[in-house]
Length: 324
Image (tube, rainbow, N blue to C red):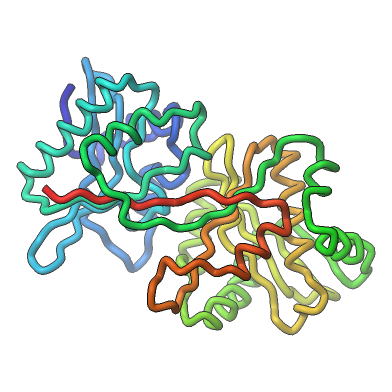
């Protein structure tokens, strides 16, 4: 087995492996790692090959702090870590050994990465997880993240929601002033998104231009559900299709002026229904941390409860680190 740094002429090979891998998803394709406008990264992604065939990838960038280099899970992606197909334990261990030798030879002080959660795996497999633990990779951050299981019938999924949420949905569906529409009106949606994020002292992860660019780079994988009140845009849910199993609610926003109508409930239910009918297994509802807390890992109990009212369960999104 050998390890090498990714070169731009290897994009086709890289993307093919992501598509065919066990845990690859939208965040690992080269176009996603390079779409950013006004943000630059020193890409230092790695390819592991055995007998000329790719067996694993590691999307990453160099990050320097106080003169020390970190091989960092690519800052432009929600998930990173090792991307792989079917691995034996010996192969996983060899990959990590090669990885560590490479990092030392390149002068990296440590590595930090966010592994892809098991929810995204085509076939459940914790071989790499165990191999990392055995080699003393430490989990330094734990985030609570919610997901909705889309198994069963549409009626069963609906009935897993809290009674109050079901009532909101039924009432809104019969309200002639409320209209839902799947469209690409990012320019209508973005001001609502910015206003919502500003309440918490933060900005959206993506600029409007970046969302429009991503939509062009990945046709059909960004889906925007807009909510209108008498033709006035009052909210929307933007979803990212991660892979064949999982779709992500990346932004679910509403105009506070219309909060009493509870349009967010209708938006989420319609997203659940759409994801179910589209054949997805899970709807990733994202992390629920308090953005302005002294400890950024502090859970937002109200947001977690809001998500649980839609029948969501919770998983851990972790970040791992090891010094060399």
